Length: 72
Image (cartoon, rainbow, N blue to C red):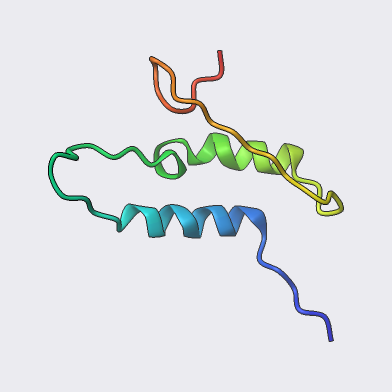
């Protein structure tokens, strides 16, 4: 019997919740979680480009002057 894997959206949502629980000592004062503040954009990306038959999924986010998920 084959085991069904969780959807990429549910994996991303769960990872975002786990990351939200992280805490850091001083001097860290701010931590950004793009899986929280930009989840809708990330979800749209997954729904548009995820291919369950692909052997790899490459995702990159480079921080810029207007936030972690600026798109140009």
